Length: 228
Image 1 (cartoon, helix red, strand yellow):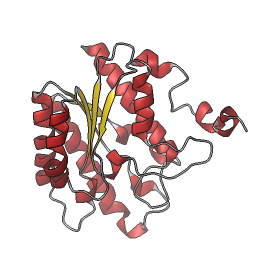
Image 2 (cartoon, rainbow, N blue to C red):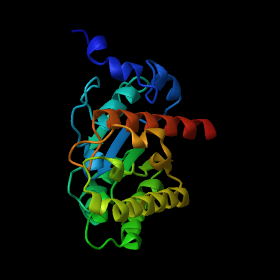
Image 3 (cartoon, rainbow, N blue to C red):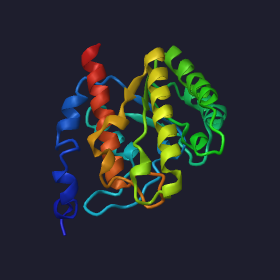
Image 4 (spheres, helix red, strand yellow):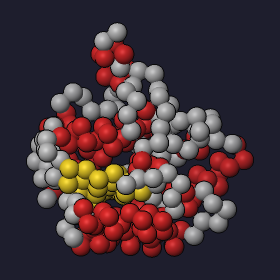
């Protein structure tokens, strides 16, 4: 079976970049050093989905970036189960030492899953991660969250309170990005949010969801480039 046949659903997905579109969108991308910081969202924890390449968003994004920056250097620090404070404590220093000119920061999701979620404290941690990166001249990408509670794999008892937390944290992340001049990916408004994009663990994106996330990062960066 050829790759074209095996990944026919991905090739036909209207939510994804068409062949060559990523290179066109990122044609003027100046970035040569990419750092990825965060929790399982940054790590790209996922599972297979029929018709799509089994790749996390970061691997897809690196492929897109290397169409315009073949010598792109990458530092991937994302690690599952970390709270936002732990991301700052363990990943910020090595990220700054790497001297990235582009960084993607995804964290806060594990804090949100705890019995008590102090959204102000987690917002402060996110700001403490992004601020020194921005002060170093780095372009930073953040993202809101798809509402995982629409997934059939989430316990009905937790859907309403968790949906409220997801909305609150997504809005706070957007506000931090706006305040600090980061590029924000507004996933809560994405039309695929009610489609089959979630893993069966009830927490993460499947391979299709990862592909959509990558597409939206590329598009958001393209819009950023055009607005400069």
